[in-house]
Length: 123
Image 1 (cartoon, rainbow, N blue to C red):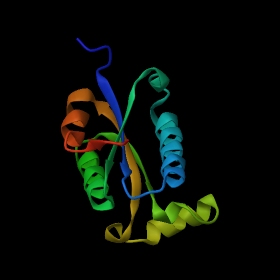
Image 2 (cartoon, helix red, strand yellow; image 1 turned 30 degrees about the vertical axis):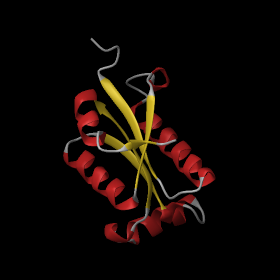
Image 3 (spheres, helix red, strand yellow; image 1 turned 90 degrees about the vertical axis):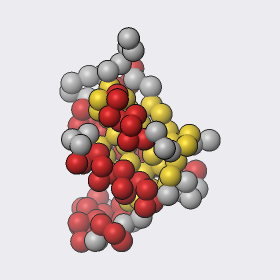
Image 4 (cartoon, one colour; image 1 turned 45 degrees about the horizontal axis):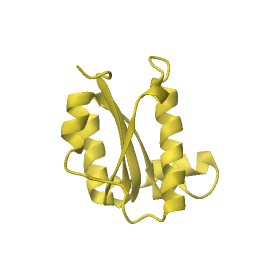
């Protein structure tokens, strides 16, 4: 039996330059860690980083939402201005217009694996 019953996976936009990708990943790690860190020490869990395009990341986000998987995401609307300006801009942007930099999931190992199995490793 696996040591972990949960799985943590980030899927990053394959078109991002490394600095933007790492920035988005750091923000998602902090956000998800704050949300689920009360229940477990997620730093002991492995983190798998995969890649996909923005459209596939958006679809994965919707699948995670519909299946009750905890997630956080990062979009192009979150890169300029203050935190409150970023939040407002994101809320005012239609979902189909968002450019996803990444999404990070944590949840039941089998469900997260099934949702992310089609993506390639980020190298």
